[in-house]
Image 1: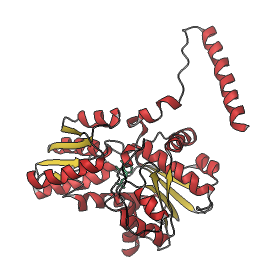
Image 2 (image 1 turned 180 degrees about the vertical axis):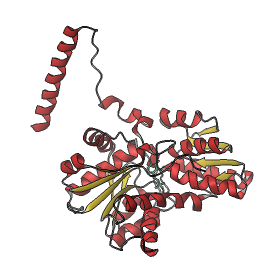
Image 3 (image 1 turned 45 degrees about the vertical axis):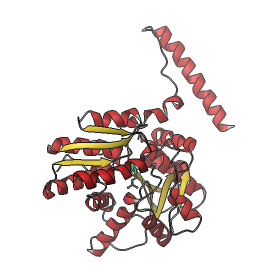
Image 4 (image 1 turned 180 degrees about the horizontal axis):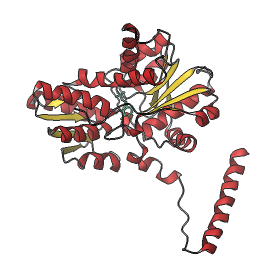
Length: 352
Ligand SMILES: Cc1ncc(COP(=O)(O)O)c(C=O)c1O
């Protein structure tokens, strides 16, 4: 099922790179993936293609928001019936971004892990194709395209270090698998790639296990603005831990204010408006650079996995307001003077 998913831009991030002291920083920009502006379009495209082959007529998912949007949109395109399950407290943009495709939407009073448990029971009883439960192997393989494309866009070479957000850990582990496969079939020369991971501090079960040297993940109750990556009981957590350790990477965290600052930093330096998951990635990228965990000369790829227009609530109070003027030159000039003074004050505060 092809709705134009994939081959999103790999952007050389000169300005952000200078701010962070990284000379070869690239951003894989899935904030503009099609059709629903997140990397989830990749995994759903594969899962629903297989669902159709297997004869499913109703497809479904347990979602933190982006997966719901992708499943609803791509099911609509394929003419499949669709029922999606989300936590009831998701951002308005994520809810509307599913409803518009007219699936049945179940808003569950509970967190993602409770939604997921309910869906396992529904999948058993109804025999529907759940993209991330009974179709999960196909769904997961879809993330490998984020590895394949980066290799191709770098001129058929592997990056040296990557930074990837983790919820269930599937994306992170499958990008690793994608690089390995290209080496195995001889499309790219082998070299070590360091895998760094990013979690929100308010939901960081994998980062916690990493920090404590554990090889098992203890589930947590999520409490963060980064709702798309708020999975307290991550299915692929142990595999992610293994990859971080074997490649010499870190799995680090960002607080909610740091996530907001990360969203703004990326927007102001590169013109990319990402959602909270991307804010987490940028905040962790900054931490890792400051702590000396990143080689400043090396080819670094940060994966931007979702679009900021879907999580406007997160930054609404942090971006100021437009200057309201009357349609007169004088009004414009007064406002311009005010804006410039404000800008100078901001600048002065920042440089103190
Ligand atoms: C925007 C975004 N980035 C990253 C992730 C993490 O994906 P995974 O569950 O494969 O770790 C998600 C998951 O929902 C997401 O929505």
